[in-house]
Length: 460
Image 1: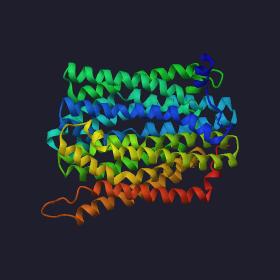
Image 2: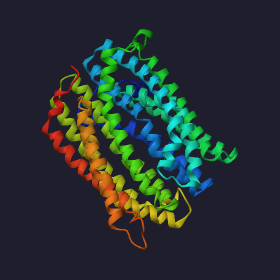
Image 3: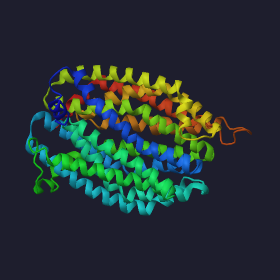
Image 4: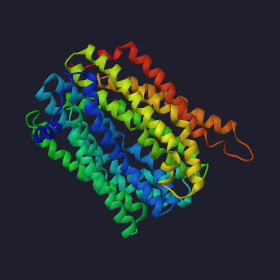
């Protein structure tokens, strides 16, 4: 038994064994971890929705797109790190792996400083630019400032867990995240119910919990001396390694930035429908976060799988794993989507006792259902391309679908459906546009994957 537990914490070599088994074994702890991470925002919403009110729920949700926009630096570094670590680990290049991990630590420190400075300057003006209702703008601002000023924990957890995943160790990151999630829930209840800190309390709880998970990741990496070296001179920024992290990670970061910008633009449209729809949008996005977890988990698993096998130059194995992984992702997502549709009202009712809000959220959620299956295809095949080093293609696809497809469709439908009853247009435009972007993205991603140019992007 102890030997089995010990193996769970070891790095996984995905260049050997049956591909679908390796992918599932790697994905399961990461899926559980992603569920735990999603609980951060979900618990925040449940606590403020039930103990502070619907406006507080709307405030936390309205802060989301801005929070994501300013955290893209961490997402970029994390993706670049995961790709490089996977490829160097697959190629068994210890020195290159050590420099990559050390440079990740240093780049993250620089990014945290930039985020802290930017947040203090832009948070309030951004909220005003988005016409955030006066009833929730102060809550939004306080929530965002606490999250950004305490972003060091979130930054290092995301980057270091990305390094662990690149090494094939998804289990350690899961354990640390579960610890942080439990701590976050306890602190949420303590700060909001006991100390009556409101929205600021849930932000502070999240910051503290993320810092704990980051420290645990540091301790874990420091023990992996049989795989790489964590010495001071590896922390010095090295042109080749820092450049490759940025080159590989920047497209992924820009992809998230583009997505967040589109969300912010659409958020302005969402805000025009009033606090009730803002709160409904928050509930849908929280449930949406869980519906998307298999897609993101399989996408990350495919990045690590492809990275290690491309590093080992086993391209036939990459193709076989891509086919198997995508089929499993589609099946898993179809089951979860069905469950969400069946138990939709019960899920929405967790966040609020307002029946009108529950019905509105349930109706909006049903629009997105088919889109989750499309996203299973997009995330899996994009993960393969990223793992091989082709991070530009997924970026351009995201650019096209989120900017050239979603935003015009959202505003177009809103404009065409204006009436005396709906002076700003039909609220459904927000979710119909998202569905269209997801379906088109799946088609375009499949075409570029089948063309096979991603096979020429490896580091070595």
